Length: 140
Length: 158
Image 1 (cartoon, chains in turn orange, purple):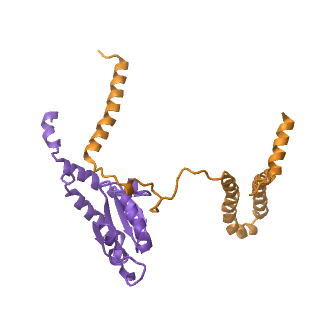
Image 2: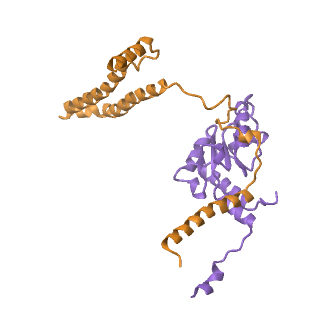
Image 3: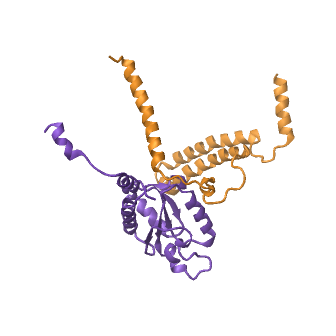
């Protein structure tokens, strides 16, 4: 008789065998007519130019992160702006205004942080790097 | 009823051509190739009312995964080379539905200097769908027409 582990082994062998049997069947059945055009990289129909494995500047990443800040801000403030006049009529107006200012202030902290780090400067001078290395030296 | 009495009623006999056709016609993933206003109708056809996906036809963003390209709109000479490359990059077997008058023969714009007078001058077309633009029902009809064509193809004797 099989032990419990024997059943697991049979399951394993069958499931691995299943994959190869059907890959082999697919290879028998499917048309296989490669050519240079078919094997070329897909670039939305454009003829690819140069190598795809290039590095993008890391500064684009920081810019995208800062964009996210303003993106969230506009996406959440704009709906409020449409109904704000109705709120002014009730006793909800001041509360909403304080809430909005608080929200903007929280996001502004992030902006100030990025500003302080010098991430808003596209051309970063040598002084920034030197200062940083100095401070690291002084710490160590 | 015992298992052996039921058995003959539950056995289906087919051949590989039929089986392959049956499988292929129900998984016609199409490459989104919307060029003009026909692509709006194409989007409607993919939407919940006409629901192209109940025929096993799902939109794809890359030609590698596509079996079908639906040319929806006016093909210009500038786009023609791209269309040719996209068609070449699709996996075989591949099918083409030419949707709307513009892609059939240039349609409304056949006097324009920049418009290709028919997609069939660039790539082979399986189904021509007339209309300007065709309604979603018409696109469904053309897909069913293509399915019938695929079912009757002899893949293994090519």
